Image 1 (cartoon, rainbow, N blue to C red):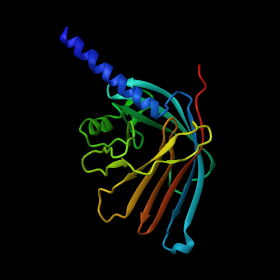
Image 2: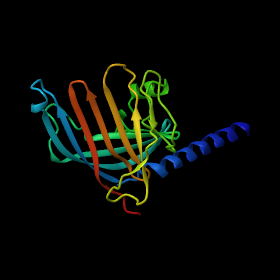
Image 3: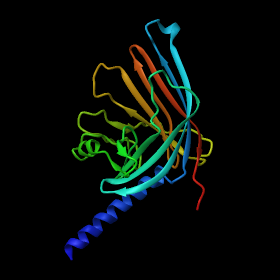
Image 4: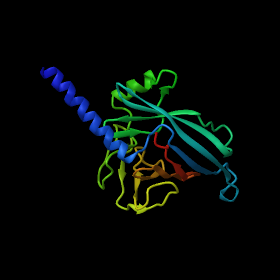
Length: 225
């Protein structure tokens, strides 16, 4: 009896955590985000001759599946306008992982055909070597991360960032990173809006010019079934 009560309590805790994530980060089948991407890079010809590229992607949640490590939400990505830099590939199949009260949104390696994590990714995740990108609820001063990774934390300046299709009156949290490689000159800032997700992202290299900016143009929630 105690064994079953323990399992029930564990499942209940996971459900509460996942509900907390769902309040912040919508991952319904059919949810769609349209992003504008801009890059500026110094190819050796100086600041006056930067290589620039602009393209637009549509990212749609194709489905979600409960797995032993949490919830795996698969997304389809399509370049609808423009083109990325030469050699830059936009993988059409990517995934989000929801684990406890955290979301892993970058570099989640999965097997779309079987709806499970790739073996190598799973080993690194369970060993604590992969850092979540967001842990909810976002509150000032909260930090998270994995050993040897830069910590992400909500910054003090939560400002309004209105998004077409997103809920009105919601503050946007600015998430800032501290590099785990001193002297690298890289900073990453992400703006996150409750009920919408990522609305803006900037990755800036402060030595040789290398800049990537992503801006949410439109959020189209899935229609209720």
